[in-house]
Length: 239
Image 1 (cartoon, rainbow, N blue to C red):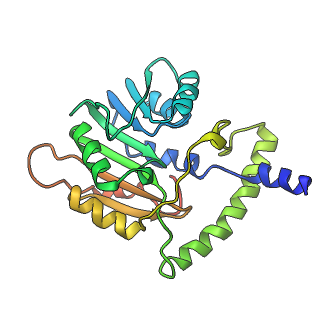
Image 2 (cartoon, helix red, strand yellow):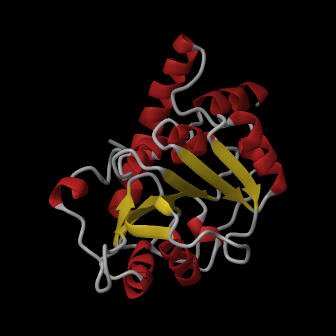
């Protein structure tokens, strides 16, 4: 049994990290300042730091913030804060990003706060967990189950050869708070579009959805994402 548990552990891979590249592709060109909401142990914040002049990373879990502060470069500021309750700069960010945090908060207040934090023309991009919508999503659930196992073997071999990487879980992942999502992808889409007209929400293959919105340059309705931008948000791949 221990041997089986060991192999299961070696083959496990991080669905959140798998979609980091997809989130990074949503960023505007060379953003000056980016906000990472629910930064966890700082893995995404570190990647954002390579693309932005400054990254503000917030999380309400003190242990996660401490882990992030140890891991990120100097242009990342880590803060323990409740995003919905504590002060957040208004109109200060070229992008607000989040991975697996949005389903921890009431959706509409969280999206409103994120929109307030953006500069005109700024981008909100979030990957989070939906509640599975059965039987409607049965085909994608079956496809995900099969692909998950195939990629587990591929990534496991990659880690054995290269000594790490290949979407391995973060060392502090077991300490990250967990919560079951309450909204399906369709429910997220309806609520998001009510708060942020023009918001795009799509189900991704591995038990996540992508939400993307660009803040209008002036007053009025949100601008739609261009066809070129949409082409970068595949539902089956982070690329």
